[in-house]
Length: 384
Image (cartoon, rainbow, N blue to C red; front, side, top):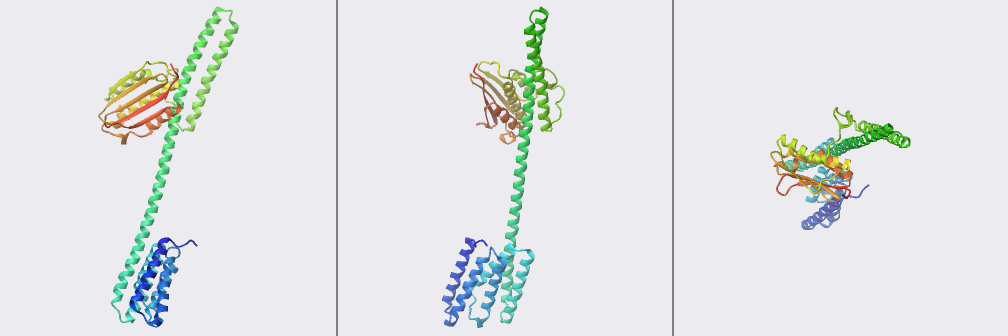
């Protein structure tokens, strides 16, 4: 059995001190001192069972109270005994079943009500009824609050699990989409390389005298086609794992249409302006050719950030800055809309974070100093 709580121990000690003080002030006869002190101490000890064994503790408190009601025992009824009895009854109502609490309250009222009537103190019945009803009601209210808190904690835990599951699902879908887009970029590059190798091979074949070179180029061409086929199969597996629908018609995967690149950000800004958003675009530094996947990631970050501004910022102006440096590419999108940061976070930011993490970059998002929302991605690039 676990030890009584510190609260129970302190309460029991307080009842013992209060009861003995009341006995001393009451100036008992010498013959009443021992049984009176014993009754006070036993009643106080019953409080040690209030938490771990409420029914036995209540029974002990009732026994002490009833014994003190009988003058022949030599015990003296003290206020501490009455308080202990009510607290024990409240504990039964709080920690035991509803039926046990009702039975304890009714039995206590019946027993001590009869003693009050037989003892020519009928008015004590009213005080007894009020005390017992109050103690039982407090116990039931505490129990109801505890059950409500437990239910709220369970609901909060369930919501946290669901929120985590939705976040994991968003990350999985974004990773699948990023993998598919990288597949498009790499497949396009490999396809163009294969076509170029095939053109060179055919030109050598027409000229003649380059059998060895022709064989090497044919092998490279075959490997290129095989690589594209493997990429198609890989993205098919990714889509199946993500339970995504088939690639829509017109996607780069259905042909050699290249994926978008950062150099096309001006066309992107024009499309967003046509949708009703004022966009200021500034390119700093010397634009240069970037690795295909990183180029696509930077374009998608700008695209997603502008989409978020359209969705959440309301009437606003967006500022897009693309900065080329020796070892870093920085793209930032900021708006001055009244929408504030509350509406911006979502799956779009999840996708941005995944793209930036893929290239060991850094993504900073948050409210701007003058309101609105800002997104800034820093991506390391090979030195020019």
